[in-house]
Length: 484
Image 1 (cartoon, one colour):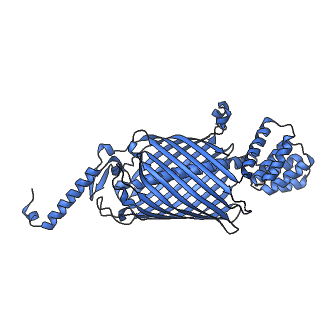
Image 2 (cartoon, one colour; image 1 turned 135 degrees about the vertical axis):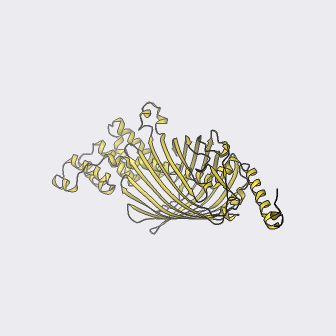
Image 3 (cartoon, one colour; image 1 turned 90 degrees about the horizontal axis):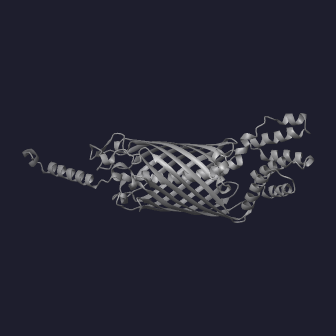
């Protein structure tokens, strides 16, 4: 019943009626996804996973070249060599010490001296091949393999010679094709990002989550297929062009409304000079949610990097995207996010040790949207520590902090401008199956499969309770790479 005072105040009556209609419309339009999950999180989730998979692939390949360094530390110094310069074993140990420090030219010179007087030492010659390979001296390494072929070799040395010969032939090709397939299983403790408060703000009123929007744990099947082609343009500086395509699929077991898929493409080139390497590229993607296309992007990525020393590399990256969101059955307001996004990153890679690398960067992002309450500025701090362990094992620790400031309030939620602070920690262990016990019983085509296990902690803290939540994620992957 409406009081006489209310009847006498048309403006107040109109406000209350519109507020009730807005609240009713908002509640009726809610789906489990729209109520418990921010659409932007799913876009970032796809990109995080594909970036993590590419980093995993790069680290796996790098581990083949640096893992042996950790095993070859000997403690021998140059002073020891001066005291006994003709001692073959001492020179070999010194060469291994130089390899452990990443000083390949000096190690090559030491091994050359040993082989001049002892040309039939196959174990020393294969070590020399490895050093030349790491120094990108393909012709020199190939020549040494030819000498090894004329000697009686153990099965281990023969396998190493085969490995280097195969990879040198690939390295010397001007056009490289690379295919990587990963399949795995994942588990999230809070897949639908249900808020900690178990309630949400709607038109500045707190409303308890219905049972359908309670915190839901779920498992998923994951598939990532990555194809790359690179062509060397034949210049001495090493200019090249490239193209890549990535297919990503995450199928949920129970929360089917959050099934994710994407196709991502990139075409570009790298121009090298003494001042910097410049890599411009065209990028595009089509991201699917619940088997429906909800985001298409096209844009450009511009990457600059420069080696200041052998240990320190600095970089700058600028990326601009046109983002075309489309309404889908799971979210009928996605189009309100349509608009461009600009991202900048300044950072460096630094080798702490020959087997340990740190990458740090500072990022800034500016997202525009059709509705300003979906537009935001982002400041990010990113750190990645990579540790190459013996036998091609590795450990990757990643820590990110994001500060998001939205440009206008969403009045269907509340009158406050949204501010989010998010932390993300991720640790990944990887090793080929040959390193693990199971590798000893597998047929040869399966021995080079890479196993990786990941744990991720994600915590978002917002001034609006709807967007404050946490999630623990576990993931197991098996990956195989083909190069031709």
